[in-house]
Image (cartoon, rainbow, N blue to C red; front, side, top):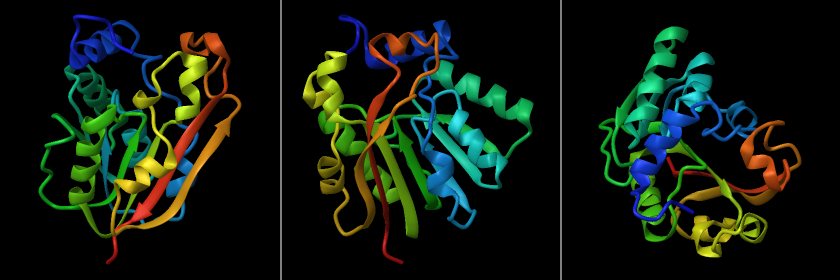
Length: 206
């Protein structure tokens, strides 16, 4: 999945430096999933260049974005300043970052590392969620491993993510087929514009 001899952080910094407009994944899920939630504080884990964080801020959420790629956070801060929205960003490892006051909403979209590192991020996500708060996780489904030539262990399925959310009320745990995931010209559309996405939405008991 990554270039041999290059750390994951180096890979993503280079990606955001080289292709800032095609590194982020177009999010067809977030607006619909948060529409019915009361506006409050939100955390965007693996925020990248801030696209989702700024989208939440634009509809009234007080947003914090966390990403370990310095170049991504630079782009996010610049975009937030230009848009004049209530969003702040930090360079940090999402598996260990401590945000102080718990959040009403935590989103992690296409940002989970594989294997045990992903489990660590989700454990921290649960800790950062306020009682009654909602977590939304979206990841490439394991069914994409063959068409994209990934190892199955690099991707997720609903059951795996749900197993990492013990004692939480699960509202959604499904695979969604998105026919037009990538726009024309996006290099990720080389194998087709469609994708299967694992979506899990859950809440912490109040």
